[in-house]
Image 1 (cartoon, helix red, strand yellow):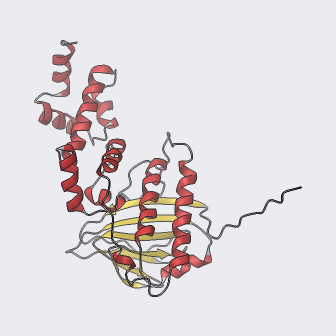
Image 2: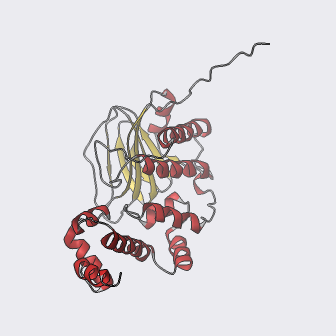
Image 3: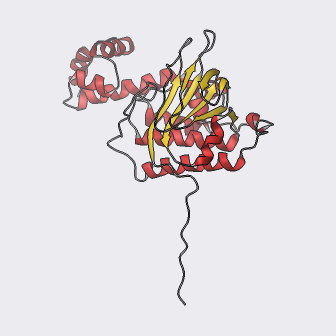
Length: 289
């Protein structure tokens, strides 16, 4: 008996990805009218955003998404009293069904938010920082984990398929306020341990792990005994000490690898935590070994 293999068709195919940004917009922030040769998904995880485009002009609120069509003129802005947290994800796809989401904001349900969060996490494995600054050419990492690029594409395709299948004009009835499960705090700590050299914010973690800022701060401190900022600083300090004592790197090189803006800022940071400059600390501790 001869088996007959069947071809599987792609309903939504993501061909290329332009950018994956996680912004905390400043008050009064705005962009000029712009258009891209690719689709642009805009999602608000906190606060409120003003959107102007060819298909829709108005508010984009927390947990809502809009998708600008390729070539569609659009701009973003926020009020003086509002500083929203926004995800902007640019990608290339010719699926005609996606134009459905350019006409009005779409509240995302729990499954869609989960998929979007996973997409952002994997995107961090593929693309190098900065993630919170507009860039026309996001660089790929040199150490991309096995299959991460394909997984990023598949997660985004799954999210878009879910949206197309589930979308109705009455989607907002109940789905936007789907009950969120409490995060596993150890999973959050693991994420911070793996990414502490990048810029990590409470807002980002709250979105990625589907919780709120107050709960996250409380549970993080209960588990670690420290705030997020203190925890990250302690990890940076420990790594700095390790490299100062056990590597041939210059202080400038160490400062750059730990993502400090300058050797001067690194020196101030180090002295504020140890009472010594890096040079003084190295001299004092070399004698102990």
